[in-house]
Amino acid sequence: MLGITFEGGASRTIYSCGIMDALLEEKIYADYCIGVSAGAAFGVSYASKQIGRNHTLATQIMNRKEYMGAGNMLDPKNRCYYGLKYAYDTVPNKILPFDYEEFAKSSGLYAVVTNVKTGKAEYLKVPPDDKEWMLLRATCALPLLFPMIEIGGQKYMDGGIADSIPYEQAVKAGCDKNIIVLTRPLGYVKKTEAVTKLAAARYRRYPEFCEAMLTRAERYNECIARIMELKAQGKVFVFTPRSAFGVGRTENDPQKLERLYRHGYNHAKWAMNDLKKYLNR
Image (tube, rainbow, N blue to C red):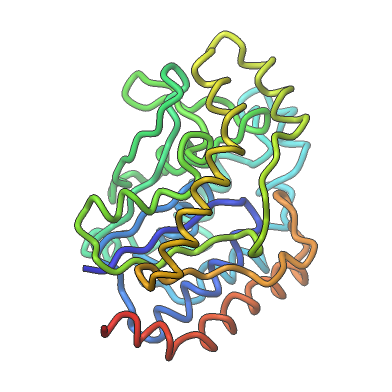
């Protein structure tokens, strides 16, 4: 049983989109898919088998001010760096149609969210009939840049805060082969940034959530160490970018995103023989 895990990273996840398309071209379909933040938001197009959809989104839509930009935060009905209705409704339902039917027939995708009250990760399957993508909004809800997203009476934010690379969920689901797609170069060490401390002050009413933010870097680095140990043992297959090529969290320059996408696509093609050997062992 094959599992695939997509790390988040907002615009940096365009690297993963190149890998997704290369896998789809080779008809490598996972039995269990899980993603965090943008890893889930882009991962649904892998689950729906829509080759090139994420590429079009990155190179033709993400640079529109309606999609992302500081101006969106000034809208009292939006309060988000991203245009929520535009990105999660207008785009998938009108501009760049999502194949809901194929997605429903597939194994689907699980998205990680962080419960604001408990500070714990929850692993929820993306509903194939939710055309406003509330779960994807929740998994992508970066502190300070997004409002809290309410689902079933609970408030959620970015899943990466509680579990940045949820490959263990694929293992628990019974996957004996696992592909893990990271968005940081090999050797990256996460540190607690000043903006994280600012966010902790902003959400101080939720102490467990703040604790999760402040301990995230340490837990992330420990997780990477475990993944690299499993990789060395031949138990998982890991993709990591050589570089992010200057692409930051909110990058929307089509040329930069094109370069990062191509890096992911070419990396997957280059590694395809080794990947198939791993899958066929």
